[in-house]
Length: 215
Image (cartoon, rainbow, N blue to C red; front, side, top):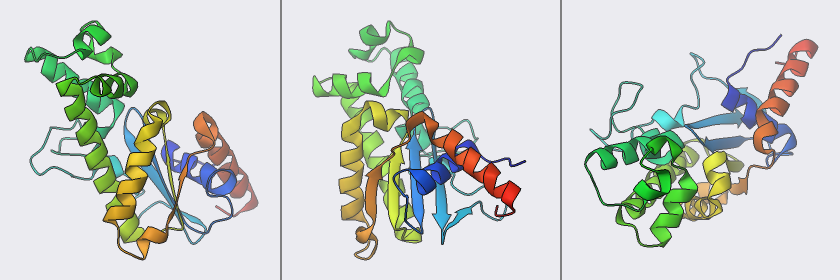
């Protein structure tokens, strides 16, 4: 039997059978309802000393920034995740900020998607542009720092937000290239290939490894 964090399992799936197949080290960042990641170093899944490795969504990108359900302030997840965008729209609607996103969601922030934000931003909506710009900025900042510190062979970007807003991949990839050290810029940046199956595939591979005594 093997038990693993879902995002780390997805990272292992991409490492073994997806965008990182054949590499020895990988960082996989998934942007969806939240923002999580998994790392594989020297061919082994990195769990951390207290099984807490990979919580990139809860790295602080804005000192004294927006409150996060984790109890801290300024976590990247509050600016770049689907749930973070919804919470920010909720605050804006409560403050009666003018935005096309009110009509797009019927006034219900829970109906907001990243695709709605990017579409409204392209049409000139001020709030949407702010949400888009900050999501791109802080996601790039966090991922670039991650790459600089770990220096992986492959960086994989995936998750529902990246899949529904394909341009976000291009923005973050270009930003990581600019913001990292010269050595770290050699990282190969790939879109996740396994989609929703990444976690299932990774979990199955980890379970098989546990049975074989490899995990």
